[in-house]
Length: 291
Image (cartoon, rainbow, N blue to C red; front, top):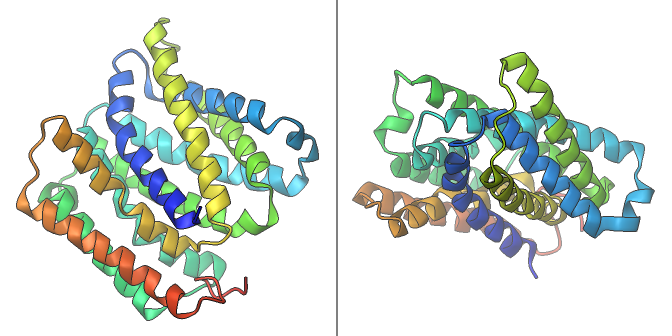
C-alpha cells in the first residue's frame, strides 16, 4: 500500500475523533482522559510489537521522548480547548498547523520546500481558512480558541520531529515510547494544573480505549509512512482532516456553507500541487533525499 494512502486514512480517523473526545469530557477532565487514552494506546501497541521491543535503542528513547512531549502538549491543549468550543471549530483551528510545518522544517531540518510545494501549502491554507470561516481566523479569541491555537505549534512540531527521526528508528518501538511518554507527561501535568482524578465511569474507559487504539494506529502509520513521505507533503495530505470533520459533521446534521465547500476544493487542489514535484522526480524523495 502506498504510504500516501495510509496518511490519507490517518486524516479520516482524525476527523472523527474530535466529537468523540468532546463527548468523553462529559465524564472526565481533559488531561486525565488524554493520559489514559495514550496509556491504553501504548499497551495495545506493545502487545502487538512484542519481541521487537527488546531491541529498543537509546536513539529511539530520545526520539520517542521528544515526540511524546509534542504529542502531550498538542493533544493536551487541544482537549482543554474542547471543553469550551465546538468540536468542528477545534478541528478547523487545529488544521491551521499546515502552513507551520514547512516553516519549521526549513528552520530545523534545513529543507526548504520547492515552489510548487509552497504554492500547494498556500492553496491548502486558503482552503482551511474558508472552511473555518471568519470566526476561526478573526481576533478576540476566547480561552478555548487561544489554547487550541497554541496546540497547533506542538502538532506541527510533532510532524517535523517524526520526519527528523523516521529513517533512523524502528517505527513500532519508537511509537510505543512516544505513547508512553505522552501519557506520562499528561498525568504529570494534572498536578500542575490542579486537575483531579474523575469519579470512575465505565464510559471513560470505553472512550479512552477506542481512541487509544485509534491513536496507536495513527502514530504507527505516521512513523512508518513518513520514512518515505516528507513532512511538507505529509502535511498537505493531513490537510484533509477538517474536510473529513466537515463531512462527519454533515452526516450528524450540520449544514456546510458554500464557503466551506469551496475551501474543500482548495485543500484538494493544494494536495495535488504538493504531489506534483514528486511525480516529476520519481527517483528522489520529496525532501530531496535519494531513495
